[in-house]
Image (tube, rainbow, N blue to C red; front, side, top):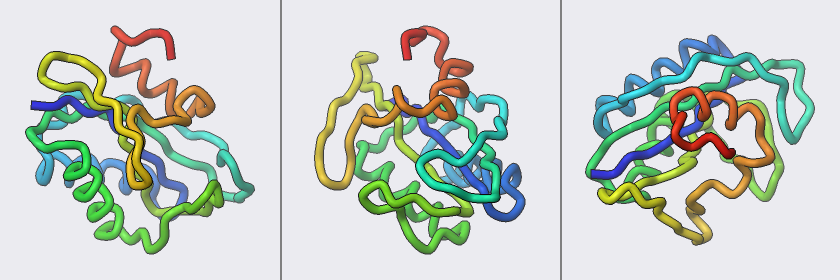
Length: 145
């Protein structure tokens, strides 16, 4: 069993409903969502937009390896209407964004992956207050990010 910490964001449509639907789908398709942070309204990061973001973080317990979880979360994004991904730091408005932040193995050790498709832990956590704040709320043992 793995434990995943996942970041969520939306700045198009009913942003709160988009996040909650993504959590519901993760609970159905991945495993048990064991924690969900508060929902935070934040400024866009890395690009300009007139649309504010709704952000949150959740913890999911599931048996799937990181690449499988990435595949499922990307399918959830598509199912919720996301048609394109951010590429090379070119961010745009989006219905939903689901980012794998951390993965812990059965021993509670952080899984480290660095590939073109997936980097764990997520390399930009320290630069993103909209990720750190909700993550601190649900992962109090990890207070230094």
